[in-house]
Amino acid sequence: MKRGFLVSPEPRKSDCELLGNISAPPKRPRALVQIPGHKEPPPELLHAVPIDEATARHGVVTTKIPPAAPGWAPDPDMYTCVMIFKGMKEKLLALPGFPTPFFTPTPPVYAIKPAGKRYGGGFGLVATADINVGDLIVRERAIIICPGWMPIPRGQDGKADLGMYTTAMEFQLGPERMAGYFALSNCFGKQKSAFHGIMDTNSLPIGGLPGYTGGCGGVFKEISRANHSCRPNAIYSWDLVSFTGQLRALQPIKAGEQIFLAYLSSDAPRAARQAEMLSKYRFTCRCAACSLSGSYAQYSDLRRTLIALQANATAELRKTDADVAAWAMNTALPDRMLIEPAEIWLNWMLGERSMNPMLLAAVFSRLCKAYAALGDEEAVKRYATQAAALEKAFTGSDGGWLVVASAPRDSAWWGLRQITREDEHRS
Ligand SMILES: C[S@@+](CC[C@H](N)C(=O)[O-])C[C@H]1O[C@@H](n2cnc3c(N)ncnc32)[C@H](O)[C@@H]1O
Image 1 (cartoon, rainbow, N blue to C red):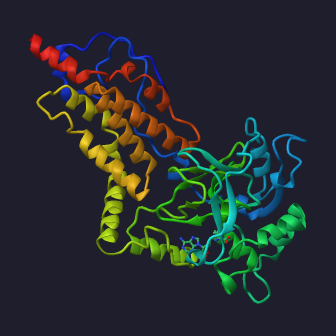
Image 2: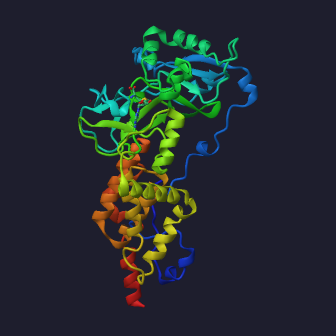
Image 3: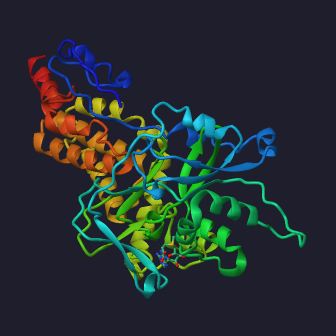
């Protein structure tokens, strides 16, 4: 997100006559802070393509990705075994700075503990300290990373035989880490080989790797122990350059509370979510959102459906600047005209914890710009601070929101409604 210096003359009356064309506020002196706006999805999500046939014919090789620098981390947990197509390792190692050092909270802020019958009788991550929104819970190297598409050899009986991958992995990781992999949960039972079942139960998205944009999955010793909730309190993300997965808090988590991720998008109604979970992961979700009954369940379904619809209205989301400018410069429109719907969307997303990052950014942008136009410093600070924490949960950085929170009066939107009113009195 770019920040700029917006220095230009006071708005003139003629600006108000251009309402249909306005896409940004009239520029004013002292405007130093740009309020972040709508974000487009990263292009790789839009254009994921599987590996081309020529590369695939070379087959998969298994390799070991080293830690940041020789001697930086002698811990064997720092190595990742990667099932990779020929040529990819060289491309990976050629990334600027790859692999960068990384840090994880020490001592840990969670422990792996029995999660109870409700969550399949296995383990889960439980917070051992209070964690704030956006805070890092854990950052770790995956045990193994596999591309979403791999050539699967067939045994003499014609069935999938992944034995060669298991042997190659053992060669890379050694018996102790292999045992760690095979200790993980497997929701596929005898339907798949243990290697395959554990991979499909525990892998989290890695996105593309240089030379393969089809999407990969990583299995982690710790993060993969997190149970699922359709109302998650944490979010997982992947960082290519340090080659680590990370978990951050999506809402304040108290010591003793379980830490949950959403394995699947949580914006569908309960029946659809449960059907997808059953088909992909073979379990019936018993999370807090799926345990609602009666009108609470209906209300939750309705809110999620509307959030999904709104998140898909990308053309609408991009119109924030035009909408806020048109409203700010037409004092006949009610002061809270843009704020009320934006606050409803925000409360619904936070209530369901179904937080589409693009809708969230558009809503915070609208709220901060509209409150700045009204000259409400406290409200801009409050929303920009909240946006910074959530942006950190999604991306690891505040995305420029903390600057907004520290200087609401330095935005180009500051006091626009008042300026418009004064202009009207003068003319
Ligand atoms: C990736 S593992 C999570 C860690 C696992 N509990 C363990 O002991 O290692 C996924 C498994 O956890 C259980 N699980 C996770 N979330 C659940 C949920 N919301 N409802 C019911 N079972 C859940 C299911 O048994 C599922 O197969």
